[in-house]
Image (cartoon, rainbow, N blue to C red; front, side, top):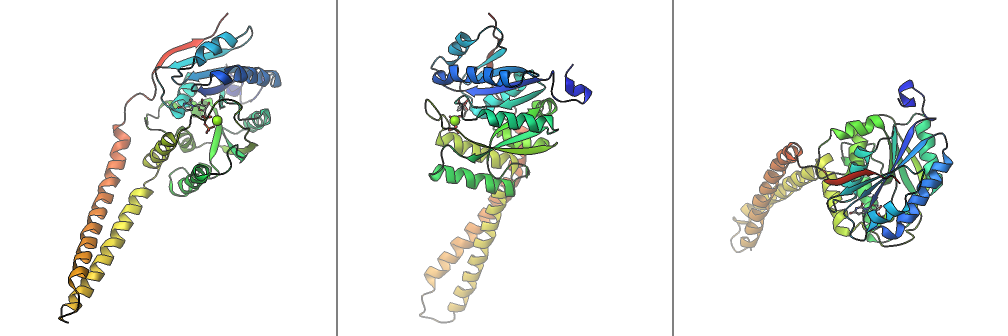
Length: 322
Ligand code: UDP
Ligand code: MG
């Protein structure tokens, strides 16, 4: 039985390090070594490494198997194809056996000092610890600005105000959070937003993100765009409301122009035809947008209930042995 069951956090507990990996063969040796470094740092904890291979085609799982040495506790989950990092993180959290789990990236972008801070907050009573980047490895560029803007707008308009507006990177969660997550079926998921939704005691730590040592980012623009849409659809009705407001504003403008055109009708010779057409287009278009907005409100909720596909398909879950 875990120590947490006795109300004591720490000695004897199992910490699972959940690492999603997609074509990370070049970094596999590195993250297995990092796992051992973490295990040496916390001798009172039992550390488990859970690698979720997210459909790699570069032989990542084979290298993890090769790297495993006596004394390691490594669980390898192989997904049937590439499902995306949020599905892979979900798989790792649901398959891990720890009293507490910490996500880390396969490309070694988190320093060991961040792991210390995560564990310290957990020992101090936190159920969820957010890892935020005080320094980002990629600092500038339109994508980074967009990512930061997204986190701010999402924090302000979603039903998960604990989702950090600084944009979370990694997360630590306790077993009770994982068990709640198990019952949450969303297929198109922002797993971090889902964890924020669970509640309990949530705290934040900051760390300087290290540059990726090898390989390129697998987090493509289209994957990022999908995550933004998933996040809003699952947790915020704001876009639908913006649409309604836009429709109302367009409609109001149309009605105003219609009145202007009606007045102009009493002054023959003045150019009223174009104004009337523009007015009608705006009025009708506005009304349609309001309609789409209202239907969207319903669809948004119905979609929540309709999604029932599995989040990921695991072709194998293996505890590596000699
Ligand atoms: N990843 C994954 N599936 C994907 C894309 C990424 O499991 O479809 C993993 C990747 O191997 C890494 C983590 O998610 O461990 C973060 O991805 P990456 O380093 O490419 O993103 P970035 O650090 O640029 O945000
Ligand atoms: Mg990375």
